[in-house]
Structures are given as C-alpha cells and as structure tokens.
Length: 246
Image 1: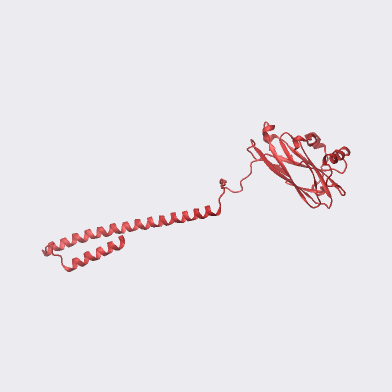
Image 2: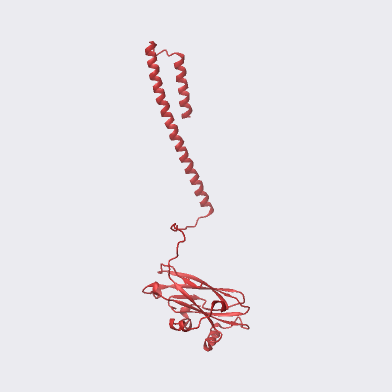
C-alpha cells in the first residue's frame, strides 16, 4: 500500500517526538538499516529497502508512518510477519512532489510500529487491526528511522570509474588485443635495432671500399682485377647484410 494514499500513514514531527520509543533489543523485529540514506542528485526517484525480521515465535503486525508522506511511497506500509521470517518494504523518494528548500535541512523520519499476536489470523484485515490497536494504544512498540541525503563516500583515493556491462567474451578480446599490441611494439623495437645494424654495416662496407681503393692505388693494381683477399672480404660483408635483412 502506498503511504501517501493512506491518511493514517502520516505522523507529525511533534507527535513523533512525543511518542515513547522502544529500545532496539525490546522490539519484536529487527529493523535494517537504522538510517535510510538517499544520495544526491535528488531530482529523480531514489529507492531504498527496509527489512523487518521477526525475532519471535509469534506473528508480528507492522505499520509504517512518515513525517513527509508527499515525498515518500512505502510499499507495503502495513503487513504481517510470520514467526522467524523477514519482510522487505520498498521506500521510494520523490522530491519532485514536494521539493524542499534545502535537502540537508529536512528532518524526515519514519515510525515503525509493531504488535505481537499469538493467535492472529493471517487473513486479518490489517487496517481494522491497526484502527483498533491505535485506539487503545496498548501493546504497540515503536522505533524511529532517520533519513539522510548524503553523497556516498568513495573508500579509495581512485575516482570511481563508470561501469558498463562486460561479459567474458569482451574481456577475452580485450586481453588478446593487449597481447597483440605488445607483440607489435616488440617487433617494432627489433626492426629499429635491425635497421641500425644495417646502417652500421653499410658504413663499414663504404670504409672497406675506401681502404681497397687505397691499397690498389698503392700497389698499382687495376680496379677491374681485384685479388682474392678483396673478393673474400666483399663476400663476407654481403653475407652479413643478407643475414640481417633476411
């Protein structure tokens, strides 16, 4: 049931403060969380979940009221919890219905009321049950739930990264791509080194040719008739260049 559609779901802040609250350990239910936080931005519907757990061996009827019924929808705001069972209540914030001047200045509260019944019929009309119970105000246990509007804190120094649905296949593709890029970088590095070696060999060949010409000039040997030693040197240099290029 929506809290803002039920006239009995509203309680004024003054009346809430005047009510006698029950200590947590004396409540028949465990209420979690004890504070409902609605993080900004507030120009949207923000959903929270309140869980009530019955600690007793009897049925527990509950009813939830709020000091700001225009801002919140509570589903359900009344109900019955079986022994040792839990019940989830959806609490959604709609600030657009009643925008406050300053969100941090609001003091919204929820009041969780419970009644323990040993022989209650699970099909009992909860409205009639609470109408009778609140008329006498007997055996009702109450606990307050505060509301906050704080930005969720990031536990690390690293700014949060936007999340997107990534399946196993996408992760595999990403890993293969990274490996491929790494291999390309290694090949580029090796190619650069090979190019440097070829450049050095070419320089050595030029130097050797100069020395050969100098020797030929000194011995007055025609350039067209190189001796065996010169041919061997040229062959070795050619083999080295072919090794690095191939």
